[in-house]
Image 1 (cartoon, rainbow, N blue to C red):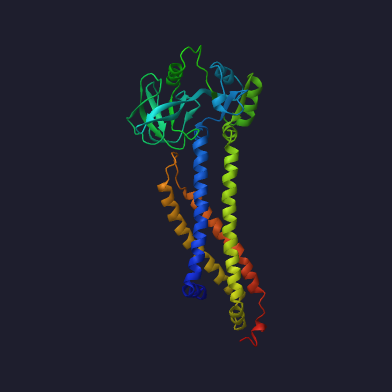
Image 2: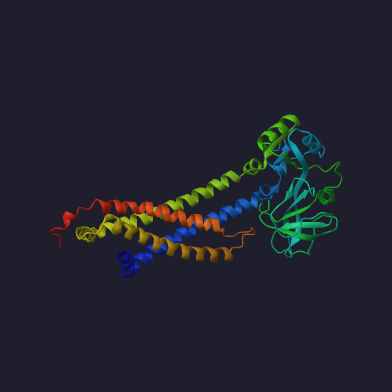
Length: 365
C-alpha cells in the first residue's frame, strides 16, 4: 500500500494528468445524465407524477394526450368497467400567461380535486380546490402571486408550488376542472361543449392495472387505455430522447474505463522489472495487485470530487428553463460504476503481474 502512495507522490504530474482526464470524463457522464433526466422529466413529469393507476385517451390520439378529445360522459363509462375503483377527468391545453414578468407559453392542466388525475410533487403550499386557485411548476412564481391567463376569466391565485410535474418542457399550471373549462371556453368561444383529454382511473385493491386498462379499451368504444407508466413511455419522442442521451453517456463511460485501463496497463509494463524484483524478494501477487487497486481508487476518488464540483458549477450557470438538479443517486451510481469498472480494467495489469516469473530477476540489471 505504501508503495502505491509513494509512487503517486513521486509521479505527481503523471497521476495528476490521469486524474484530470478521468475527472473530465466523470464530469461529462454526470452532466449528460443530469441534463437527460431533467429534459425527459420536464417533458413527461405531468403524467409520470399523476395520481392515477392509468389513463384513457381517445382511440385516434396516437398515444398523445394533447391530441386526445373525449366527451366528458366517457368518464362514467370508464367508471362502470369492472376493476375500476374511481375516475377523474383530465384536460390540458397550451396558452400564454405572464410568469416572472414575461408573457410565456404555459401548459394548463385541469383536474378534479379529490379524484384520480390530481398532480403530485407538491413542494410548498397546497393543491387548488376552488376556481381562482392554481398550483404551478415553473420559475419566478411564489405562493400568493396572481396569474392572468391569456383570454382567461379573472386572475388565478397561486396556492401551491410543484416540482417535477411539468409537461412539454413548459411551465405547467394546475387548476380545478371547472376553472379549466372556463379558460377553454374563454379562449374558444362558441364551443358546443368543452372536451376532456383523458380519463384518469384507479383500480380496485389487488387488481392489475394493465388488465383493467385492457378491459376499459374493450368495453368503452373509441378509446385506448394505458397504465400510467405505459402512457409516459409512449409520449411521442421520449424514447428517442432517452436512447440518444443513453448512447452519449454510455460512450463517455466506456471511453473513461478504457483510458484508465490502458494507463495502468502501460504503467505496469514500464515497471515490469521493478515488479519482478519485488516478486523475487518475496512480494506476493496479491500485495502488488493491491498496490494497483489502491492507485486506481485514489485516482477515481480524486477525479470524482473534482467532477462533482465542476458539475455543480455548470448546473448553476445553466439557464435551460427546466428544473435541473444533481441527484445524489446519480452521483453515487456513476462514481461506484466508474470505480468498479476501473478496477476490472486494472485486472489487466494484475494479470500481467501474476505472470511474472521471479526467477527472471536473476541477472537483471
